[in-house]
Image 1 (cartoon, rainbow, N blue to C red):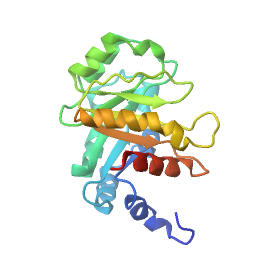
Image 2 (cartoon, helix red, strand yellow):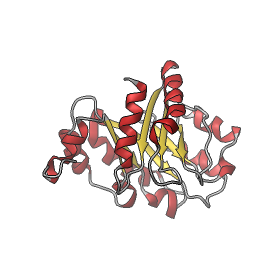
Image 3 (cartoon, rainbow, N blue to C red):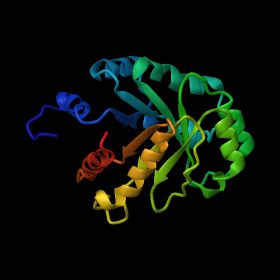
Length: 219
């Protein structure tokens, strides 16, 4: 952000350059619906918020929850109105495949909202899981991280990419982003909506990399 830009104007400045953002604070503590309404009012037309689902669901209860826990997340996020993008649920790296638990969980998700699931243990990346996601039109999140397994399987009418800093910690750079730009082109050609988010970092590489990817795509 410009050095003298007041903090209250940061989001408006961000929204001049990007058309979406992933909200992470909702993972740690559930914001009230009024907060989501306020965020939506600040956003320009066409802007979308992705919402990271509560760690209570994914890390503490490990998907074994009653529908009211899901409703708490979803009902608050609905405060974003037409600016609500996907809701992401990220599982822990030590959470291994449990197909029955997955099936029970996704069956409770409302069908009028987009959801994505990020698995951090390789045991989940199997056809049986893809079939469950596809049956419920839930996207398989694709994390780009050297220590997180990934699959480029498409299981919905959109895909959700989370770009983490490469091992160098120096950002991606145009060369490393070119293959991802081609993936985005291919998915877009299939009429898929593509959500790409870069993990925030203290040095600002995420902003530069996001701008570089947009430039490569020439959207």
